Length: 500
Image 1 (cartoon, one colour):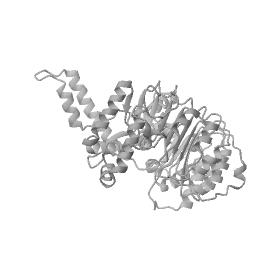
Image 2: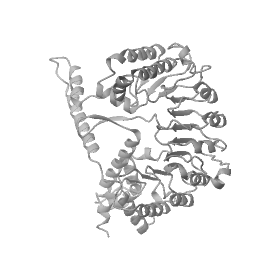
Image 3: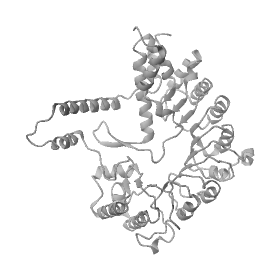
Image 4: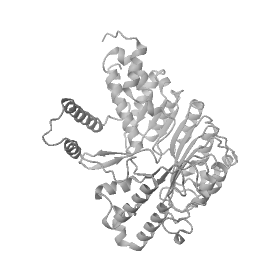
């Protein structure tokens, strides 16, 4: 194919076409990253989390790059820069194939800024040792790697992969997302010590923590993480947080803690906040054990976003009415956004509807706490509060399946809405829409559009064309969602096999 345009212009066009610029942001999805509705193959509505949305965006970007590189030799030559700009794997076999490609042409890895290995099913046709060696080799070929995301547990492979990152990406790595055993804390500490440019870290801990963990020389390290702004911990992270109390983290502004279903041995969060809470602007606490919210808010005066579990029994809540809960000791001057985790029992749908029949007293106690804590979310306690977001995707899915709250919980729904309307606060769900906005079928949308045209009134030609265009766009988007591209680099190997 003859190309009258210079390479630089083609590269600029391809950059717009692949649409992957957001994948290189030095941040990771948080509890406030919006979920989205989609229809399953069975015709039911389901929620796609922000992380799943990122995975799909990478697959769609790969499909666009494959189409570009399949057009002609010139576009194929230019497309390599975009194809290897990020590497996304959901199949361990493709990790080996990518390793072979990078071993054969060592310049390809120079373009790579993002490396993402998502969870895959066991038995992918390869051993863990082979996968580890291939992944280490890929890291070695990527001197400009900035984002490293691995969603599957790094058990026996942490040492080798950590050494590779600290050797070849020490000055370039900005984002780290890993899943490690709780017993590998010492290795993690040594790894963090070697990454001075790290700005975002998400660490998931897997397994039961030992009663007494032996950190060896890592226990005496007073780490300085000068660039770390976003710290996210998930699982039994108590030993890590206890160690981090004495570290120097001057740039930390975002802290996300997800203790999953653990209830015991929660670390001394208040002491951590006394050392690092003064500069925090984002604090996400997805935790079952009750915490001292008034003290936490006092220790974090700069917070603009705060999330907590409204199932908590906040001290002295029994002595207060709905509008008088002691959630704060004094009005918090900076918080504009509050997120609510859990709330599974609030509206009598899903699992809570069943549990209500088994133990109605416990259910009513939790709902009472929900009412008291929600009643405290007012402009009196938070003068700059603009929005409250319900973050639980399971709750929203149950509401959709039930077509709204149960009849005996509808009064609570209305009361919370009236409170937000009176205070001028927007009440949202995890998709960013107002709470109660459930997805509609295309037929419903079409009926609403048609109802806007008065009976007997002719539809303007340009509106008719626009509707046809919208229908076609919906069809194409649906096709793209269903067309799940084979994981990561598989699409290029069909082309490279002809070159082998």
